[in-house]
Image 1 (cartoon, rainbow, N blue to C red):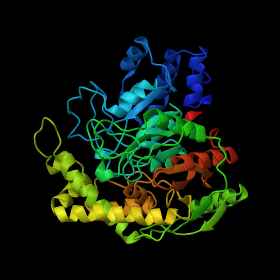
Image 2: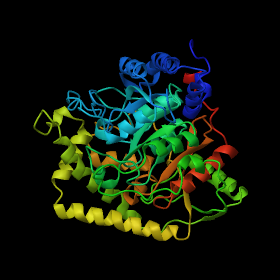
Image 3: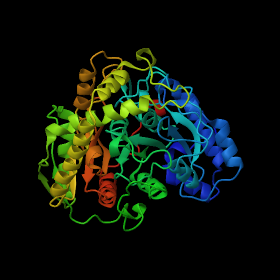
Length: 477
């Protein structure tokens, strides 16, 4: 690579510090990122919309002084509205949707942090999968093994960071869509507390309160600093997360104290868990004990059988509304205009009653109360990141005729993530292990509602004890 040769040696805060010190210019960082997209994107198909000229214009107009000034940043092709830029939502039906006139508040805060938006990343249709294989743009491939999935729905974001095109990328999570891709691609992926990041002005809440925006990152400190830059209520928000005691970045490196840590290998839906994710969980349990924490096996006493059905009711009902939201078509799509699982999930939603939706909302709230009772004793819960290695492309296929089998496969792959979308708790994936084949393996850490601070303190401690920053796939070589 020409240009700024040391680009990949830094996380996002590191690159921004070089800009502050005038050791490198934002234009150099942008060209370094563009060069890597051009060299590596044909292999992984992470970036589906180039915004190079917009990025150059942004830099030329002058960047604000923020924690990430000058850092190139791709934005997911879902939820994040950029003024004047199309958002396809990974769907042929929505690909011609007119661009919004204004930025979402989240995007405005990303810009105020100094990030330079230079493209959109691939996502599955309407975010309805934990893989990223839309018919519109084609599949995103895992940079560690291009025959496997990169995770979803933020699969393009994770592949872009995993392939070291960028150190940080926008992502969102409604049932694991930040955390599953982070686990697949060897990255840090936090789902913040419900209401931590605003969805103003376009949405009050996403997916019945399950969905939230944040990012996938190379380091814990980037994850924390970005949350500092974006967190906080927007005008008219229906609810907000508890305010942190201090900036999240100050928690990174702060002593966590002796935490009470529970761990479980039992997913709510009873799905089997493969040996290698279990091995990395056990290794992490031993590490936490060695670091001085109180660690014990303890599975939360929750209504596990309700988790997946509750989520499926919420997503089916929301899919009905999403499919009817094309601003110019004025109608819902015909079956041949969207992928089969998308259409079938919407059809399930059409058969639901209003009472079904209220019962699902109440079930989600009940799960939240049950997890709150668990956290009266335990500060953190550890689980495997995923139940298996990233499967081969095509297995979690949104063109399956059997929609029930489709969702069974989704939650056989990632049974530990969706519960915490329903409860609203913060949960973070950490790439703490490697499989026998050299693929990343993750552990999920979950804290009580509103307590990202404890997660950042523990995550930084684990990162220091078992650093992962120097592990990179061959596609980044």
